[in-house]
Amino acid sequence: QCSPKWEMFGTMTLTEYMTNHNLSDAELASQVGCSVGAVRKWRYRERTPRPEQMRRIHEITAGAVTPNDFLVSASPEAA
View 1: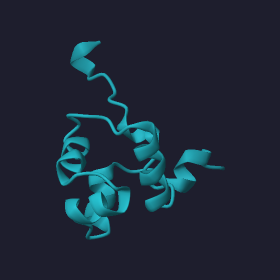
View 2: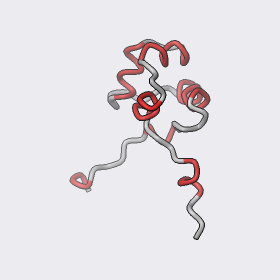
View 3: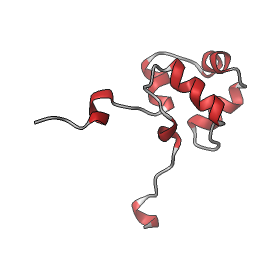
């Protein structure tokens, strides 16, 4: 049985990536070219990165974190 394409690559949240790679907010901020506060807001889903920041995060994480990973899905209670 073939697994779907997305399972082969396995995307993750920004927080999961940072934890798995021992990357601090300050380190990612430096790589993306933004403030530490911006990274924290992305991680806690208080703000969504701008398109150019999403592209940079995608590059830095070698595709592990995609723009779709920043989309908030509706909770079952909200449906």
